[in-house]
Amino acid sequence: MTSIKDVAKAAGVSTATVSRVLANNAPIKAETRERVLEAVAQLNYRPNLIARSLRAQKSAKIGLVVSDIRNPFFTAIGRAVEDAAYEQGYSVLMCNTDENPEKEELYLNLLHDENVAGVIFSPTQQFSAASSTYHAKMPFVIIDRAVESKETDMVLLDNVSAAYDLTVHLLENGYRKLAGLFGDASTTGQERSRGFHRALKDYQLNPVAAHFVSPRIKQGCDTTLALLDGPNRPDAIFTSNSLLTAGAFQALRERKISVPNEVAVVGFDETTWGDLVDPPITVMTQPTEEIGRTATELLFQRIQEPSRSPKTVILKGTLMVKGSSVKK
Picture 1 (cartoon, rainbow, N blue to C red):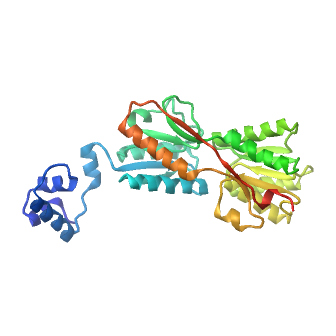
Picture 2: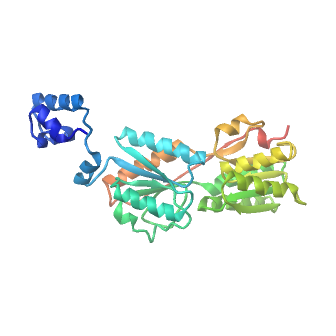
Picture 3: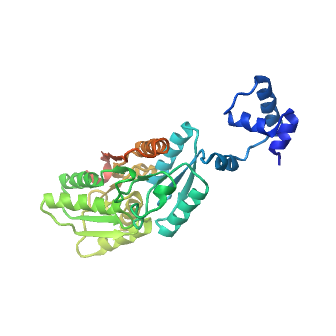
């Protein structure tokens, strides 16, 4: 492996000069710079970025910790964060916790040891920003899940209003026997449950059922099958994330139930598969591009101004009405 000494020897300069050229942080004669860069290219030298970061006490990397990479919402967030970071000359280290607080702790420690400039993450339900020591260790921005803290930057969706509007859409289309499936792993599911129940209360209705389940396709399918086979079958199913939506739709297909004429289904987040099935799925979309970019901007602001007042940005969802909730 080529070392900085090899580059210095080939260019006829000191290793300190090579470092200054690569760091571009000191005046160097144009002729000398050209010789060094030519030697770097000929020898295919790649500087030890980690060592340079440690010496500089900063890194051109940020961390992104998501709760479930299988959820298309987090995939889209990851792309937006990566694009925004790349524009600023940063790379992104991505970690997936699977809603496991132990993995969350492990990855936050790992990112700290990697000397990242800061972290964007969606916390598990067990995470407590108030008791966390990470504020002192590195800047971070919370996305998707609210935490009780007055010292943390957050980018969130107005989940209660989004769920309320999605439920009202079902009610306005004549559905009255609504069942709700909500993820049990985060505050997001709780907030969307509140919006769901609030809308039903405003229409003087009670839900047929409301279940908190693991936010996975299998749990969505199994819970929906039990509802469909029960004595009080719903005429509409509200799901709080795209994986539960997929499970509910799978169950409806297994029971050969007509959607939306017999049972409607709605959910959150626009996905590729949701537009390919017949009928396409009505969803409340989240502005994933805006969430990712806003979180990245807040993180860079925090890196540059560690003592600035924290900001909470609350964004709105957009109702995308499709065939799964409008009777033919």
